[in-house]
Image (cartoon, rainbow, N blue to C red):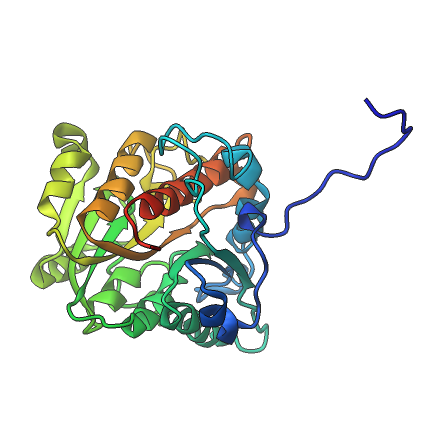
Amino acid sequence: MSDALTVAPRKEFHTLFNAPLVLELDTLSDLGAHACILGLPYGAPYSMEDVTNDQSNAPTAIRRSWQRALRAIERWDFDLGGPLLDGRDIRIFDCGDVPGDPYSPMKHYELAEAAARKIIESGAMIISLGGDHGVPIPVFRALSAIPELSEPITLVHVDAHLDWRDHVNGVHEGLSSPIRRASEMDHFGEIFQIGLRSAGSARPEEMEAALKYGANLIPDIELQDIGMKAVLDRIPAGGTYYLTVDADGMDPTIAPAIAGPAPGGVTYPQMRTLIQGLVEKGRVAGMDIVEITPKRDVNAITCVTAVRLICNLIGKAVRAGYFD
C-alpha cells in the first residue's frame, strides 16, 4: 500500500471499453478499424417534450457502465469462453456522438447517416447507441454502403412493439416507424420481429402492412413456447444481418429503464443465443441498442445489459474470424 494521503479522483470512462476516440471518420480505413461505436442521442420528435428526452442521455450512460459489464478487456468472459478480444489485435474505436441542432432537429439524421456511412465504408462493424428507436433509420440508409453487398440485408428486430407506423403527428421517421422505413429500402429483404407483446402504437392497418410485406412476426408468447434456437432456424443462413434492439423488447428484469414496460420479453440468455447465433449463421454488419431511459434504471442494470449484448456481438465475431 502507498503511504500517500490522497489519490487521483475516480476515473469516469469517456468512451465504450475505454477505446480510442476517433472523430476524424475519414481515417478509419487507415487505422484498420474493426468495430466502431457511434452515439445517436436525438430522434425525430413528435412534440417539443420529445426533443431532448432522457433517452438522449443513454449513449453516455451506457459508456459509463461498461466496466461494470466487463471489468476489463483482458478478463475472462464466461459468455464467450475467454477474454473479449481473445488476445487478438482487434481495433475498436469510439466515434463519439452525432450532435443535435436545436434549430433544425432533423439535421441530426443527416449527420448520423453521413457518419454511419463513413464507418460502414471503412469496412468496420457499426454499433450504435440510441436515443429512441427513430435513430436507426439513418443507419438503415447508410447500410447500402456495405462493401461488396450482393444481396439484401436481413433485418432482425427485437421489440415489444411493431414499429410499422407510416407517421405519427406527421413525423415519418420517429420511434414508431423504423421498420416501416426499412421495408421501403431496396437493400433490405427479409424482416424478423422478435418478442412482440402487449400493445403499442400499431393499429390493424400497421399489422396489415407488416403482413403484406411478409415480415416474420414472432410474438413473445410464441418465442417462450418454441425457444430462440427455433427462431434462429427460421432465419436463412449465409446472409448479411443487421440487429436493431429496442430495450423494451427485453424482459424488464434486465431492462427496467424503458418508457413502455410490459410483462414478459426476451431474456438475457435468449439475447445471447440470438446474437451469437446470427454471427455463426452469416455476417452481422452491425447492431443498435435504443430506447434506454437512464433515469428509470435500477442499479444501472439496463446499461450493463446493453454492454453485455455488445460484448457478445464483438466477442463472437472475433472468434468467428470476422476481423482476420
